[in-house]
Image (cartoon, rainbow, N blue to C red):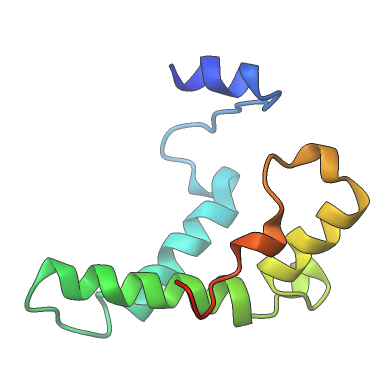
Amino acid sequence: MFDMRCRENGIEHRLTKIKHPWTNGQVERMIRTIKEATVQRYYYDRHDQLEAHLADLINAYNYARRLKTLKGLTPYEYICKCWTFQPERFKLNPLQQMPGLNT
């Protein structure tokens, strides 16, 4: 099902070798960042506390953290920049996805 959806949307689905995290470095690094900022630093009494903290962390990462790999842009700013040059690649306008007063 996943491969079918990738094909429908023109996405190339590539797999990495099992037990070779260096071939999947960005994902492994992001998992490490999330773990360091959550379960390795804080204790959660309930699962919903972790979920709330994860939501806050992801919002801070996407809308506030400037990344060298994106030439100093936040992930959200980078997506908006891509959208202005190639809007046909997007199904939704990313400018309408920004959290704000109504979220």
